[in-house]
Picture (cartoon, one colour):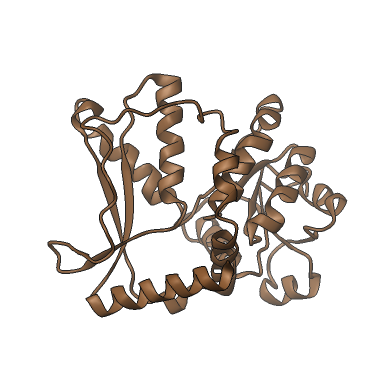
Length: 283
């Protein structure tokens, strides 16, 4: 769509609505007058109902031509349409054809790493930028690890960075998040073969002090909370960034581990049982 900086694709979804609100606040509250954006999705009626005062453009992830037509002329497309294993690659391909930069909020390691394998060279040839995991997964983890490492005179002084998410209410996660988690767990075996094709696959990262093992579920922290290994994309995103920095700039890599926390051993057991049940159901 010509005349706009940003298109939010999947704007009527759970995450899309938050993105549109932030863009609106950026323009109206924070004074970014030159910012222009449009909301995009497959249902014109739903778009107009959710965003009566916004510019609307219609496109369907199953229709490449409609996406290319919608994206052409926009600087950046923010893809909020998940699960990304089903819809992400089509949107990335359409952005290439439309000459638009691409951003998403995916937390699905298989999609993210497959996208690096499939699209890195094509985006680079067209001088386009594609950035995945630009949300809770995994900006705090990736930038947090990088900026923490810059505090020290040398990364040689850092043995390990651990991140802890405080889980207040898992029931607030939206359906697409749960759906993505189920499919990721069901297809977890595919990650190994995808990673063999990554540009960083042949890089053996040597961490100062040696590689440290993850702590077990139920480890009690000084805060009194209990930690459980976090199964999301954070660790893989940070690992890929660290490997890239090592290859490009010869920066010593930092080992990163990610956990979420709960308030009691009872909750540790609940999450453990839920994980086992999910593994059985998805096997």
